Image (cartoon, rainbow, N blue to C red):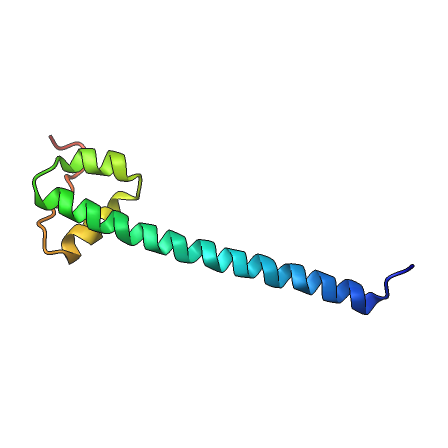
Length: 85
């Protein structure tokens, strides 16, 4: 039996819809875990954990970490100029 173009199109569109739904679910989970990580990184910094250790463990962009800490009211030192010690 030969599929007609409309059936092929409908099947292809169903695959698109299913993939989009799975992607949305995964993105929601990523957002949830990111918020958990944000809270953990802020708490760790607030209780005095080494910020370089937090950066190493968090595996997120340093600018993101600094933004999280700043939003939480934690002091963030300005970056050193290149070549300064």
